[in-house]
Image (tube, rainbow, N blue to C red; front, side, top):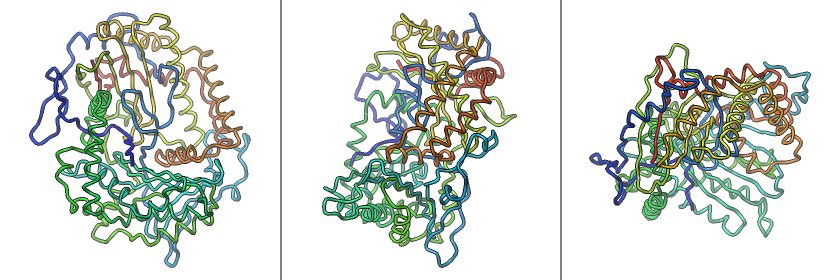
Length: 584
């Protein structure tokens, strides 16, 4: 079992030397960097009070290197997440239980193809709602477990089964930091029914993030003897989540595995990542809830703690089951009902937790830099933070901003999304092209993407440079943003990028199939962000219609809003960055 973290996880143990005085220890806590504060010359560079474009509003964008990421993917190499697996949940109340006498309740969106005619350009308008994928089957058992099934024979003869528990490190008390991760290890590795899938061509794994623990299987439909493997995979998932043995011997083995894992990921890149996340989320509990936990606490737990955490938090009303692959939906529904109906519902004495553990995550309150409520107080900018280490051979400056997540459920929502994509791609292209062949920096990135496990959209502006010449690099990169803000993007740039994005959408719509693992990732991501999961052909029609509402003026207006926290840094009333971090 290899744990795959979906976001940087833990405070770092004290390095064995060479920290240049930037580490401190608080009583009873794991060693963590004590951030020193940036000096006045750096602030002067950020403000850029003199020079062209000072004080002007500014653009937005995306990554400035060769590619731009637009789904729930890493914001930048400096703060990696696991391959887009983190999830947040729909902001809706739990659905009512099914009528008595029924083992399951099918949700309203059952099979849309039979109920609704195919979408055409003539039937769509900007206020039209997007149509859910016609082959998606959704339902809920009486005990609260929800399931989603998508038949997809690509590749033929295989399926994906993922069980997502809405339980993560944010459910931990102050003395339980890392306990959700340990429970994941013990339940997964201690499953005897999982062993029945060994030597069948199946793969399985699990991971924990701030708000979720996910167990997943990738299996052939039949083994070499012709035995059906879907029932075995679902039965193993039921045992893992709801009927684990939680033996003391297994707890000891997994404790050692996690401590070893903590040492394995103790790299300078991970230290920088945790510093970035700590500063970005200094306004909420995420800064102190990295899923891998704290070594001193991990060493102190016994079987009583593990069993108590599982009994408190692992119930079917906080579980979502996804099955995507070469399966028959009707037969799969019957199997789900037969296998998971025995999972006991939440006891009465724990009903109060149901309200806070449902699918209305994340349970954190952010201070928004962008897109906050009208009339919200202006937050003064925090002083930048410096992280020094002898293993860092180069300089990086990262400026963060946070914005609320936006659902995509209508054509007008797609117009907003398309606007953001155009801004991001154009700014990335402009910065890359303008600074060739001899830029003063080694790289500049501007990324604007969803961070569903953190419950926000994160904007990052990053300047990479040689440690000996970082000042002209920062100044030149910021000047380029000022120029973009002053003059905006040309109509030709906006038009060319819009056509390229639409052509890419049309190409995907014309593809005959997509792999089940990709479909599953998109489906879980759509559910996490509150998007409507659509068929590529319908999405393409809606995106082309949305493009009619996206023009040069709209793009430049959005561009200016997205980078105001950078080009107006230090000005009275300007939006403040969520964090500014220097690593050197």
